[in-house]
Amino acid sequence: MSQQARAVTLVAAGALLVLSFVWWQSLALSALGAMAAGAGLAWLLSVRRWTADQREQEPLIRRLWDIARTMPRDTLLVDPVTGTRFCIERTRGFLSLATAEFAPDGAPGADLTAPQREATVTRYMLGFLTTPLPPPLYRHIHGLEQDPPQRMSWSQAAEVARLNDLTGVLEASAPELEQLAVRLERAMPVDPPH
Image 1 (spheres, one colour):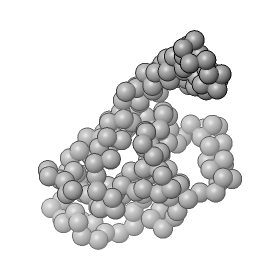
Image 2 (cartoon, helix red, strand yellow):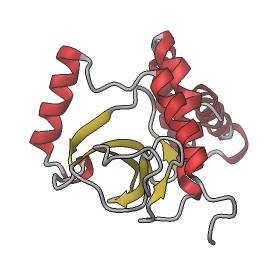
Image 3 (cartoon, helix red, strand yellow):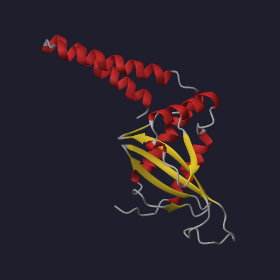
């Protein structure tokens, strides 16, 4: 279900709770309904303000989210074509996808699972608890030994958000997300462990 459909559902449920006052005569229930309808309306208005790129990203983020939910946690998967390594991380309720781009170690037929040299890790925070995050999806690029974005302090996260507001360099594009989904699907085992 898209973000817009969820927002409309919340507005409708809130409106029904407000109208339930006629039947149950409960002021608390209708107040709860009014709050739910107001929250849903605010959510719907924020979704309507998305740019075309953000609307294009939403189904891709959901696709990545669906793939990542089925992946085993802390298991390293390797794309057989590009050698990109993927790992799902679940930290503090966040579901994030970590991709590692290793420096090439030689011949084209080399063992892709063997340890290699210095790597750059790109993390995409896909969702929180049971829902994917809304667009835009940010990429966090750093070295292997640095902390993931879920472990940042509030001030560090504010600085990262400020940097992106000024430059826009952290936002992943729709073609990048599409390519990431294709590589992740290629890396998935045919019969994932349960």
